[in-house]
Image (tube, rainbow, N blue to C red):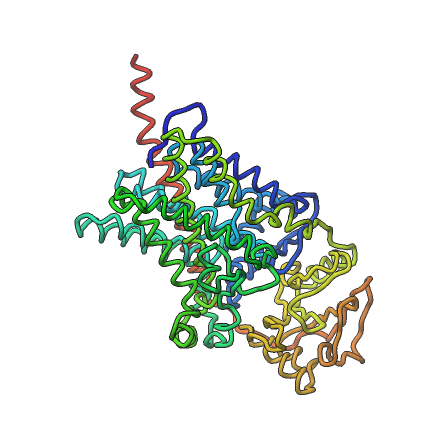
Length: 572
């Protein structure tokens, strides 16, 4: 997919389109302050702690993306980091989508679809910002994988994009690796070249993603909760069922993120008509199937669609449950809808191909306009922060004060009422993940279960949290249990609902009130923990080596290509 020469390159056109789409989508979330909803939690000063480094022995849920945020936070306020990452995802993703096209209209259409689709909207709605930022790099990984045999520069680009994707957590790392492997396989060629390219992708992926898979293997002492297979299975957010919803780019398991227009027939039917017309227009030519690039996009898209729908297929739920409970790390497969982003990538490639063809054949402008605007027309409530439901707020003084005091103390903290999510009046009562394990550098014991609407829950992974859950349910001595786990401080948020069994008996402990927070002191910690071994640093070292290696490769190829050019220029 070589771009046509012109005053504006497709990649630049895509970046500008992505920036405009990002402003339109994020809207009030770009105002000063912190946008907090569900898992989208940023804090004023994310500490560079053992947890953000992935060396504290816990399951690495936000590694190394929290480390990147913490590093950026050393030079920028936390809310600025949040805005830059969210808007930057649209710009980078739009630029990558634009590079899939040959013409500027094709680039604009591809960037609009990539920046305005149900997958991205639902992931933003649930607060999976790491998924969104990492997904922005997938078009870049795809292009780099198709050019891996173009020479040293092609190899360097693939290493760099795979490494960059790994910095945003386990899911972007897995998605990028899968995409690169499928793309390289579709390139074909001699077995020697194929083996070399596959080995390159596998080697870089293992090293670059070591920051999360190494601590995970060391921390995961039990299999994932099988209940998560059903809880995280793709859902039907359109009348076309689960598979049809995935084909349209949506189907997230969390129904509160669904877009109301997609749940009715008129808009869903219009979107399905557009998707099918787009696919037919793209794949009906022999050139599509002969070109290894578009063939690779097809294979990756079908693979993503299949992984997203596996739990809904005959026998798929049982197979997935067995894998999740039997294979270490297979819990990543529970939320299968995230793989549908590879299908969205296929639709983006198809958009670029179709609109390029329309432009080159000088068809009526109305056809080009329809090809560009249909993603927006079928998903209007994505605009302006999910129709104005997002906003930016600041953390109140009592939260900041207590966080500063507890940071200075350093001992482990437990947080109550016992609930994974909060509704703060100062955050307009939006549901938000409890922020205390990001506000503090030390160990924070809190509820890590995922509560479901039916009153059930998916178990978390922290043994201390599981013990507290059991003690609260059985009426045990939670205070003594916390002391045995090394907890000294207990923070109780009095502005939160506190149903029976959500706050332990804390009478007799010294306490102080700061605004809506009551801080209890359980006394000096008398338990001791074995010092962590040096092996805990191996994962972080691996990712660091990948980052350094990628930068050196990029610099080396740049020098190798520019030095002769500069030398010839001096000799003229």
